[in-house]
Image 1 (cartoon, rainbow, N blue to C red):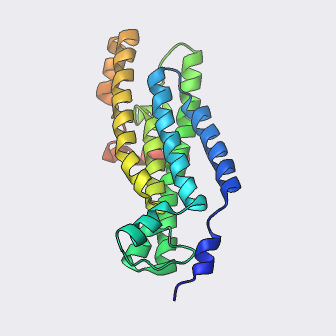
Image 2: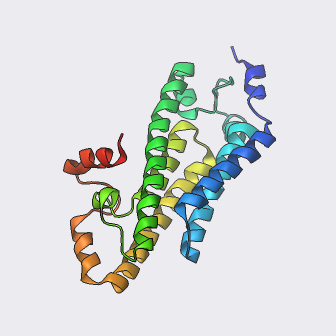
Amino acid sequence: MNDISGFAGHYGHWGLVAIIVAVVSWILYRYAAPSSWREWASAGLVQAFIIALYAEMYGFPLTIYLLTGFFGIDIRLYANTGHLWASLLGYGSGGAMIEMLLGGVFIVLGVVLLFTGWGAVYQARREGRFAREGLYGVIRHPQYTGIMLAVFGQIVHWPTIITLALFPVIVLVYVRLAHKEEKDMIDRFGTAYQDYMQQVPRFFPRWRDWGRLFDTLRL
């Protein structure tokens, strides 16, 4: 039996939406630290994802109404309906908990990569060099990997039509941004950065280096 009161009570909290969006956006711009217009545009796309996500998570469940009303899909309406993978497969609250925990793993790993990468880049820029030790000795763009993992985790945790559409665009934009930054680094540091590119993968560690990644993050 549908718990309509519990479902309705989960939404309409626009003040909470505004607070969460403001806090998460501050973290994004603080630790992604955009400087060029490409970086600002990329961060703006992620912010659009954040707004769309939390507007549906606590404001108005647009995706659920489209799926049930426009497409006629029978979805049980209760407090955890927004965990759509579990709802569509009929796994109920237990499935929603698994979905939330699994998404949380990606989100936490992504945020830790973003924070740790920011610290390494900040220190390297102060010293007039490029970051290549620690986390940057395992992957070349840990901050971008972190953003992509955190966004993916949110899709696992609380998917919506808009965020599902934005995810591949965000990935494409950050892949292109990484290529552009690498060209700029080669112009600045020459063969030293080219050698670094040959030694360290772009977004994800080699299989043998996953242990080093977690050691670097102290997880």
